[in-house]
Length: 433
Length: 171
Image 1 (cartoon, each protein chain N blue to C red):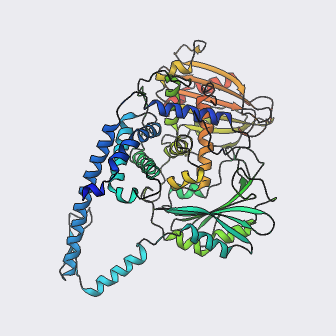
Image 2: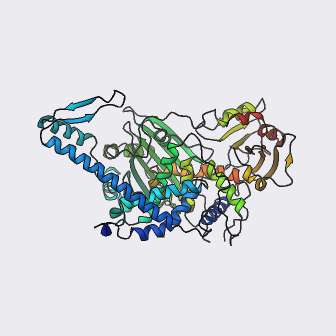
């Protein structure tokens, strides 16, 4: 079976866990078709569903045509009023001047414009970049965005550059996340800043690496701009002629942060991105709902760790059922992660063997000490896995480093196995639901 | 007239339904009923646009994108509670490549715990073999965001699955 034969985002040696996971995922997915169930019924149901949808669309289109015809005859067009005003209807006079004014306004604000093609992007890139050679590497255009790649040579080594344009809901969580510096715990990088510009746009500048597990190899610098209208411009540059499988051609990517800023904020991109249709998939309006309604995992974990430990950083509250703290007792940083999974009784036997400890209340506890990621010097990974009789699983992992992907900073994790067990079996987790 | 418009759709649907269903099962963390609904919705939407889709370079890829969108839209509508897989993995014969059904159920449980977009990233990257850029295009996200999601999701799955995937070595 071809396992994980796609491009790897890790340093030159593939990550063994990633490979095993890809294999297991393929096996799991394939198993869903292995029961011999005839999926032709699903194909037929899909087609029938499509026919119904098409019929509904025909009716809707016919209705629209009737309304337009009425306006064309110089009559009064009845528009349904707001939902909350008792079904009041407004009457709009259909005189030619107001009609033409409203048509113009509509076409200026919402009429879809043809998105920039990959060729358009590369041509614009050529105009905006400092003197040098440029060749297109192609791209694609979808309903919601455009993307193109190019190889740029300023005479000091070929470098890949990509530009992507799309649009997100202004104020949405997605809009915020684009310009949020990534968590250093998961992505290794040298520098990252987020700035609000005078026009209200937010700009993130990021100096990182192609392979996020280590600060070595091909460098990848990016600029992400989100305008107040939700226009999103992303520029990436490498110090190699291609993202992957291509030798480093120069010490740094060609554009410094000033040039990168000038490029990403160029009005050509912003105009194109702001004119793109808003993705119908994005929820409308600002999204301020917390992902974990009853308090975050990291807050709960903070309350449970022993006194006297300095909290260096903690996970944002956005994550559902997952959280971490980076702790320091004065002898080096240590990452502690928690996962909380309700309703796991169906796989209890799989996770807890006969050697698992059983507490008086029926909670099962399995302890593990193992080496951490391959290639990370001296790292160890301790974990305490617990499951309550009602199936609530709480797993705590601790590392002797401030992250999973950085070398050991101390001999052992900051918490003992006994302390981790006490935290995992604390009753507070039961109240998070 | 209708015959012309539908030209090739039944064959396309018959050929792709199985794969779409398996993808949907992974996206839903093993909820086979929801997976069927999502595939039906997906094929319905593809049917409506079939004239255009059939002329596109990659109708199968388009259908996969529609499925991912349908899944994310469903999750947004039902975001208060996550669906859970509870013994929904069908009875399967012993696989030829090692592993067993309980392990797969553990994997589905772990997948089911990821935020919907992280799960979509993982399925597109490791089940559909899409590149970072292709995944970003499907999700209408920046490639930087997809990279971050992917690394974070793997870190989380690593903790949840521990060494239980030991036997899924490259073969």
